[in-house]
Length: 108
Length: 119
Image 1 (tube, chains in turn red, yellow):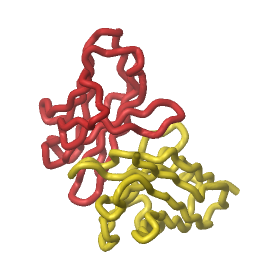
Image 2: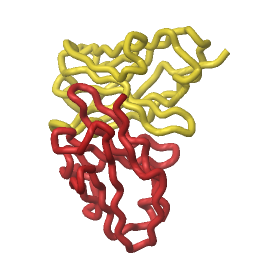
Image 3: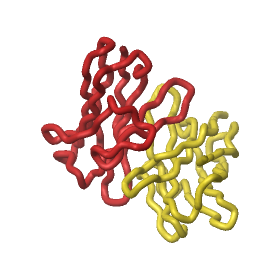
Protein backbone atom coordinates (compact mmCIF):
# COMPACT_ATOMS: atom_id res chain seq x y z
CA UNK A 1 0.00 0.00 0.00
CA UNK A 2 1.32 3.40 -1.00
CA UNK A 3 1.66 5.82 1.92
CA UNK A 4 2.54 9.49 1.57
CA UNK A 5 3.79 11.07 4.78
CA UNK A 6 3.72 14.69 5.90
CA UNK A 7 4.53 16.34 9.22
CA UNK A 8 1.28 16.21 11.25
CA UNK A 9 1.73 19.69 12.64
CA UNK A 10 4.15 22.60 12.35
CA UNK A 11 4.24 25.92 14.18
CA UNK A 12 5.90 29.03 12.76
CA UNK A 13 6.06 32.68 13.74
CA UNK A 14 4.69 35.40 11.48
CA UNK A 15 7.38 36.66 9.13
CA UNK A 16 9.34 33.46 9.39
CA UNK A 17 10.10 30.72 6.90
CA UNK A 18 8.75 27.19 7.00
CA UNK A 19 9.25 24.16 4.79
CA UNK A 20 6.70 21.35 4.74
CA UNK A 21 7.77 18.00 3.34
CA UNK A 22 6.11 15.08 1.59
CA UNK A 23 7.68 11.62 1.55
CA UNK A 24 6.73 8.37 -0.16
CA UNK A 25 7.13 4.90 1.28
CA UNK A 26 8.00 3.62 -2.22
CA UNK A 27 11.26 5.58 -2.28
CA UNK A 28 12.47 9.03 -3.21
CA UNK A 29 9.91 11.52 -4.50
CA UNK A 30 10.93 12.66 -7.97
CA UNK A 31 9.56 14.92 -10.67
CA UNK A 32 7.83 11.83 -12.08
CA UNK A 33 5.48 11.98 -9.08
CA UNK A 34 4.42 15.47 -10.25
CA UNK A 35 3.89 16.77 -6.69
CA UNK A 36 0.89 19.01 -6.20
CA UNK A 37 0.26 21.08 -3.06
CA UNK A 38 -3.05 22.28 -1.66
CA UNK A 39 -4.18 24.54 1.16
CA UNK A 40 -7.44 23.88 2.97
CA UNK A 41 -9.03 26.09 5.59
CA UNK A 42 -11.88 25.04 7.83
CA UNK A 43 -15.20 24.83 6.03
CA UNK A 44 -13.69 25.55 2.62
CA UNK A 45 -12.73 23.36 -0.33
CA UNK A 46 -9.03 22.82 -1.01
CA UNK A 47 -7.15 25.44 -2.99
CA UNK A 48 -4.40 24.40 -5.36
CA UNK A 49 -1.05 26.13 -4.81
CA UNK A 50 1.64 24.18 -6.71
CA UNK A 51 1.63 21.55 -9.45
CA UNK A 52 4.29 19.38 -11.00
CA UNK A 53 6.85 20.07 -8.24
CA UNK A 54 7.32 23.81 -8.58
CA UNK A 55 4.78 25.34 -10.95
CA UNK A 56 2.45 27.94 -9.51
CA UNK A 57 -1.11 28.79 -10.46
CA UNK A 58 -2.21 32.28 -11.31
CA UNK A 59 -3.55 32.85 -7.80
CA UNK A 60 -0.63 31.38 -5.88
CA UNK A 61 0.97 34.03 -3.64
CA UNK A 62 4.65 34.62 -4.41
CA UNK A 63 5.61 33.55 -0.88
CA UNK A 64 4.75 29.93 -1.73
CA UNK A 65 7.26 27.79 -3.62
CA UNK A 66 7.70 24.10 -4.35
CA UNK A 67 10.81 21.98 -4.78
CA UNK A 68 12.41 18.59 -4.22
CA UNK A 69 14.68 18.32 -1.18
CA UNK A 70 16.51 15.22 -0.08
CA UNK A 71 14.14 12.75 -1.74
CA UNK A 72 10.98 14.53 -0.62
CA UNK A 73 8.68 17.10 -2.13
CA UNK A 74 8.76 20.38 -0.28
CA UNK A 75 6.52 23.42 0.07
CA UNK A 76 8.23 26.54 1.40
CA UNK A 77 6.40 29.59 2.72
CA UNK A 78 8.40 32.78 3.20
CA UNK A 79 7.54 35.14 4.75
CA UNK A 80 4.72 33.41 6.61
CA UNK A 81 1.59 35.45 7.23
CA UNK A 82 -1.14 34.84 9.83
CA UNK A 83 -3.59 34.06 7.00
CA UNK A 84 -1.43 31.07 6.04
CA UNK A 85 -2.72 29.12 9.03
CA UNK A 86 -4.40 26.10 7.43
CA UNK A 87 -4.01 22.44 6.56
CA UNK A 88 -1.60 21.68 3.73
CA UNK A 89 -1.70 18.56 1.60
CA UNK A 90 0.65 17.14 -0.98
CA UNK A 91 -0.57 14.89 -3.78
CA UNK A 92 1.68 12.47 -5.66
CA UNK A 93 1.18 10.58 -8.92
CA UNK A 94 1.71 6.82 -9.08
CA UNK A 95 1.20 5.75 -12.66
CA UNK A 96 -2.49 6.48 -13.06
CA UNK A 97 -3.64 7.03 -9.51
CA UNK A 98 -2.89 9.89 -7.18
CA UNK A 99 -2.32 9.70 -3.43
CA UNK A 100 -2.66 12.49 -0.89
CA UNK A 101 -0.37 12.85 2.06
CA UNK A 102 -1.91 12.89 5.50
CA UNK A 103 -1.72 16.65 5.67
CA UNK A 104 0.16 19.17 7.82
CA UNK A 105 -1.65 21.50 10.19
CA UNK A 106 0.25 24.78 10.04
CA UNK A 107 -0.13 27.05 13.03
CA UNK A 108 1.06 30.64 12.73
CA UNK B 1 -15.22 31.80 -14.28
CA UNK B 2 -14.85 28.10 -13.57
CA UNK B 3 -17.77 26.81 -11.56
CA UNK B 4 -18.29 23.32 -10.14
CA UNK B 5 -21.36 22.39 -8.14
CA UNK B 6 -21.80 18.99 -6.49
CA UNK B 7 -25.18 17.56 -5.59
CA UNK B 8 -26.71 14.27 -4.56
CA UNK B 9 -25.31 13.88 -1.07
CA UNK B 10 -27.42 12.82 1.88
CA UNK B 11 -28.06 10.15 4.46
CA UNK B 12 -27.94 6.52 3.35
CA UNK B 13 -27.87 3.22 5.18
CA UNK B 14 -24.86 0.91 5.08
CA UNK B 15 -24.99 -1.22 1.96
CA UNK B 16 -26.96 1.41 0.11
CA UNK B 17 -26.20 3.40 -3.01
CA UNK B 18 -25.95 7.05 -3.92
CA UNK B 19 -25.09 8.91 -7.10
CA UNK B 20 -23.30 12.21 -6.84
CA UNK B 21 -23.36 14.73 -9.66
CA UNK B 22 -21.09 17.63 -10.44
CA UNK B 23 -22.27 20.34 -12.80
CA UNK B 24 -19.50 22.25 -14.53
CA UNK B 25 -19.60 25.62 -16.24
CA UNK B 26 -17.34 28.45 -17.31
CA UNK B 27 -14.91 26.35 -19.32
CA UNK B 28 -14.75 23.88 -22.20
CA UNK B 29 -15.63 20.72 -20.33
CA UNK B 30 -14.21 18.28 -22.86
CA UNK B 31 -10.69 19.66 -22.49
CA UNK B 32 -10.15 18.53 -18.92
CA UNK B 33 -9.86 15.45 -16.76
CA UNK B 34 -12.26 15.44 -13.82
CA UNK B 35 -11.64 14.07 -10.34
CA UNK B 36 -13.51 13.13 -7.14
CA UNK B 37 -11.90 13.63 -3.73
CA UNK B 38 -13.34 13.23 -0.25
CA UNK B 39 -12.58 14.32 3.26
CA UNK B 40 -13.96 12.29 6.14
CA UNK B 41 -14.63 13.99 9.49
CA UNK B 42 -11.40 14.43 11.40
CA UNK B 43 -9.32 13.00 8.57
CA UNK B 44 -7.38 14.23 5.58
CA UNK B 45 -8.13 14.43 1.90
CA UNK B 46 -8.46 11.19 -0.04
CA UNK B 47 -8.19 11.08 -3.84
CA UNK B 48 -10.88 8.70 -5.13
CA UNK B 49 -11.01 8.61 -8.91
CA UNK B 50 -10.52 10.52 -12.10
CA UNK B 51 -11.73 10.26 -15.68
CA UNK B 52 -10.18 11.40 -18.92
CA UNK B 53 -11.59 13.94 -21.36
CA UNK B 54 -13.80 11.64 -23.41
CA UNK B 55 -14.70 9.25 -20.60
CA UNK B 56 -12.82 6.31 -22.12
CA UNK B 57 -10.38 5.86 -19.26
CA UNK B 58 -10.62 6.11 -15.49
CA UNK B 59 -8.59 5.35 -12.38
CA UNK B 60 -9.56 4.53 -8.79
CA UNK B 61 -8.03 4.29 -5.36
CA UNK B 62 -8.06 0.72 -4.09
CA UNK B 63 -10.48 1.49 -1.24
CA UNK B 64 -13.34 2.25 -3.66
CA UNK B 65 -12.41 0.11 -6.65
CA UNK B 66 -15.33 -2.13 -7.57
CA UNK B 67 -17.79 -0.11 -5.45
CA UNK B 68 -17.57 3.39 -6.97
CA UNK B 69 -17.78 4.33 -10.64
CA UNK B 70 -16.89 7.67 -12.16
CA UNK B 71 -18.57 8.77 -15.38
CA UNK B 72 -19.17 11.92 -17.37
CA UNK B 73 -21.74 13.32 -19.76
CA UNK B 74 -19.91 15.70 -22.08
CA UNK B 75 -23.14 16.85 -23.70
CA UNK B 76 -24.42 18.14 -20.36
CA UNK B 77 -21.12 19.11 -18.69
CA UNK B 78 -21.70 16.68 -15.86
CA UNK B 79 -19.49 14.26 -13.98
CA UNK B 80 -20.89 11.57 -11.73
CA UNK B 81 -19.78 9.31 -8.93
CA UNK B 82 -21.94 6.22 -8.53
CA UNK B 83 -21.36 4.81 -5.06
CA UNK B 84 -22.56 1.30 -4.22
CA UNK B 85 -22.17 -0.95 -1.16
CA UNK B 86 -21.63 2.10 1.00
CA UNK B 87 -19.93 1.71 4.35
CA UNK B 88 -19.94 3.83 7.48
CA UNK B 89 -16.35 4.81 6.68
CA UNK B 90 -17.51 6.38 3.39
CA UNK B 91 -19.07 9.20 5.42
CA UNK B 92 -17.36 12.34 4.14
CA UNK B 93 -17.66 15.56 2.20
CA UNK B 94 -17.19 14.70 -1.47
CA UNK B 95 -15.61 17.21 -3.83
CA UNK B 96 -15.33 17.25 -7.57
CA UNK B 97 -12.32 18.94 -9.08
CA UNK B 98 -11.08 19.92 -12.51
CA UNK B 99 -7.55 19.48 -13.73
CA UNK B 100 -5.54 22.46 -14.87
CA UNK B 101 -2.35 22.48 -16.86
CA UNK B 102 -0.83 19.06 -17.53
CA UNK B 103 -0.12 17.42 -14.15
CA UNK B 104 -2.18 19.99 -12.31
CA UNK B 105 -4.57 17.57 -10.60
CA UNK B 106 -7.33 19.54 -8.98
CA UNK B 107 -6.82 23.14 -10.03
CA UNK B 108 -10.46 24.03 -9.41
CA UNK B 109 -12.86 22.66 -6.81
CA UNK B 110 -16.54 22.63 -5.99
CA UNK B 111 -17.86 23.39 -2.51
CA UNK B 112 -18.54 19.73 -1.79
CA UNK B 113 -21.55 17.61 -0.88
CA UNK B 114 -21.94 15.71 2.38
CA UNK B 115 -22.57 11.97 2.39
CA UNK B 116 -23.50 10.30 5.66
CA UNK B 117 -23.65 6.52 5.89
CA UNK B 118 -25.44 5.41 9.02
CA UNK B 119 -28.14 3.04 10.19
